Amino acid sequence: MLDVVFASAPSGEPTARKARLSAREVAVLELLATGRSNREIAIALHIGAETVKTHLSNLYLKLAVTSRDQAVAAALRYGLV
Image (cartoon, rainbow, N blue to C red; front, side, top):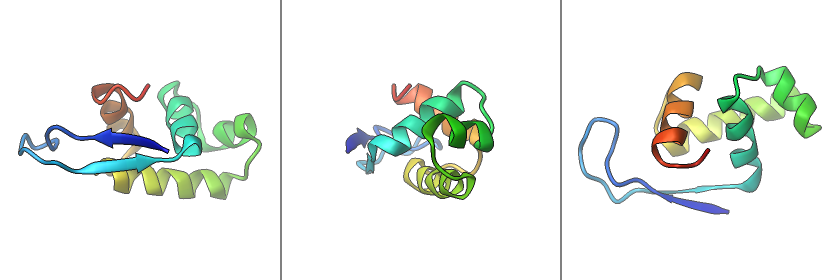
């Protein structure tokens, strides 16, 4: 598990929220940051496309984002990729 401490929320409000990302979620996030589709991520990680969707949903919740672009931006901002 990777602990991620968010110094501030995207809105600029201070927060002490911590997210615990699994190794698989980090791997999905890294591939997402390279612009790969869900299917391409699934093939690269030898998992199903539905599993990728599940990992992305979990990442969106943990990173407090609502889209692929926002997830990648958060990953860059917090030094995850």
